[in-house]
Length: 174
Image (cartoon, rainbow, N blue to C red; front, side, top):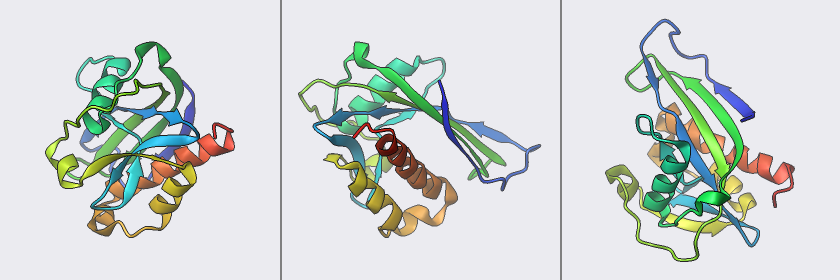
């Protein structure tokens, strides 16, 4: 899979402790809009998806995370690679936080099921929104995200999602 870009804050001790958290993200485009997770509390958009658990396959993680966060069921044979964003920065507890974010195009079934949110996702009031990529970019770049951006881990995540959306526009997916 191609590397879309790298986010390296160079703010960490390379010889220190590491927390490695690979993740998958779904790119779901329908009628010129993109399915995004919107945090009502902090007003930002992110691609549905999340962390890979143990030896879990990417497709299985993608299906589980998209189902939990936004209630959509992925059509397995529709999954196609897009690219990886590699991220390294100082962690909250460890000296280094390392994350490869694997982005996949996928189609979903029509029916929207109920969400199964983690505590922090529920607290942030995650909701499924089909939005123009431009609107999501503007919100991520310009809205006041409150205390969500007090730690750089979340600030970089919000920027990462805007950059991936910009690439999708540039590459004529919209």
